[in-house]
Length: 225
Length: 225
DNA sequence: CGGGATCCGTTACGATACTG
DNA sequence: CAGTATCGTAACGGATCCCG
Image (cartoon, rainbow over all chains, first blue to last red):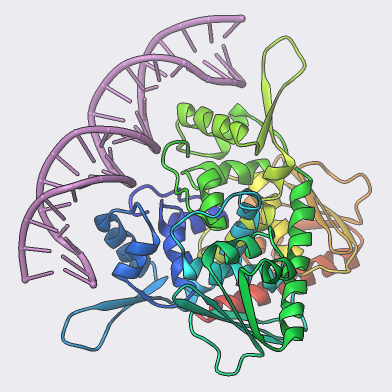
């Protein structure tokens, strides 16, 4: 938001002056799962015009949320990644996602599949629910592998597989969506054959318990409505 | 955002489809401190056009975040207040504010004074820092009185004075701003005469400690930048 | 006077085409 | 692939007017 700023003496307004523009927070959402190239972002943000994506990235760079790094190689290809300032938006993005989740709880899965979105969603789900649990799981879904690790107060998810996972789960995106939205639990998914599991069964069950715990919290806070 | 929706299968996008429009989250911010009338909102949101404020309130009402209630009296005056769905946005708004606070830490106070904004800011500051502390303080500032109460895991602030506060503080808005921004602590403010205190001195000191604790956390997370 | 509705110029956005 | 250029459309901002 270069021109239309609120300029209020208010922290929320200051935040929105940086990330309140259309598409901006969704770009940040993507980058919260790691660096990305222009084309990655353009794919993950269906409907954004290329000039607008350029504009937003320039704004974010100017405001110190995003750093642009030229990739090695002959072609002048850049990679965009969050600075520490940008990354520190994660709690706010997760809080917004926790609020917005209620409209997905009963929604059918919709294309296109967004690996980064699911990585972030899992991080948000597990952040409040998996304290103390030490888990390391790879989730194979479509072409992608999400590495999920929870520890003491820390949850990390990445698009890279973990080297030594306690277990590996394999499924398609609609199944993962149903799982994250709390429409399906692991038992049922395995029973109906939409998910395959290898590795330690107990690890998977603790993950399931954590996810279901997170949904209990979500449903409880959404039920007031 | 009626027309331009993201429509993605993503909780963040769903949230932004409801509160991602310009001004919308600032309207919610205002209403988080209690019901308000059209004119109150218009005053608190300098620069918003009246037609736009009307439009946003209608959108929020349609999406179930805001309820419109006719006030008693001959004139057909309405009051707008958040529904439970709307109120459940508070964590996200506070998280955004915590992130945006860094641009206020070294900024000079700017008009206009926004009592509701300060009430919310205090809530955000104390939410993470005053656990266990039982405090009840009235803050007299300008024409307004902010009632601040912290208890076990709960912080409430309102534009109403508390009936039996442990202490009462009196100051002007720039002083309150400096306090909330961590530019000034209570000792200094009292010493320089910009603040008057009555009631239990210990209560005020515990409040001071809580605020300074909150700023330690803020500075720590912002220092990474 | 509070609470809007209407009108209109300006800015931002969205779609597509084009270029190094 | 990573943008730039162009252009029609939708949203915003400011002012004015209206109505009880």
